[in-house]
Image (cartoon, rainbow, N blue to C red; front, side):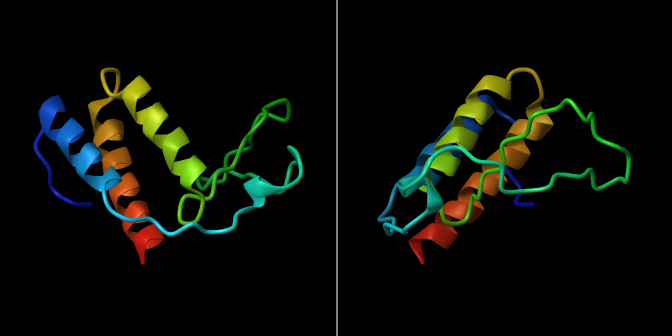
Length: 101
């Protein structure tokens, strides 16, 4: 995980910086069809998931809209869980770089 300042302003600047630059237009599944369940979700710790739960999986390395959704989640959670917010910044920066390649 990349080191970063603990201030919210530092997080905001890093997020804004990661959003700049030229991004390739990549064809994604979001460009056609409707909502459909494509993935089987399980917990990495082996515990069972709630059979009534509804999950929505996003592919962050190719889908610009997925990154926008993650960015929105960052803004929503940043005051409640600073560690998660810092981790999300790392994920956003990494995947924006991948999309720019």
